[in-house]
Image 1 (cartoon, rainbow, N blue to C red):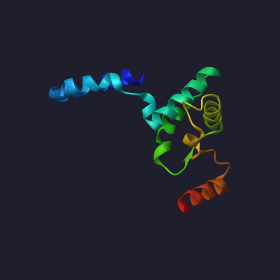
Image 2: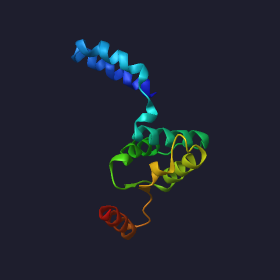
Image 3: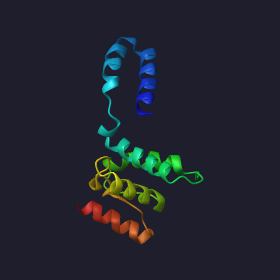
Image 4: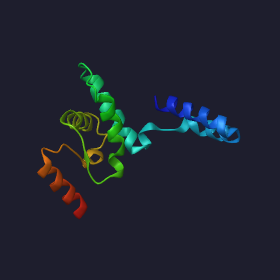
Length: 124
């Protein structure tokens, strides 16, 4: 999926700037999904969802996309199911998803809890 998407982007770049295509083609095989922290999180949510299949919910794809931003923010709020998926993957596959990678991903219980978590993150 990751390399396939990268190939699509290379094809789009080729139309706009053909002279860079050969350079992009050279690096494409070496791209590593797990070297990108956000994509590692997205893949973890996807894997967990596939291991525990149930009827898809409307926000499943959005939940996967949302966690991509976690490495770049102080705190990321997700729903209960997504937190559970990430904890499961971190527990079952720590080499792919170390516990530290999900430390800033939380489920807010209510508005007061949300404000407290944001304040705590801002104080760090």
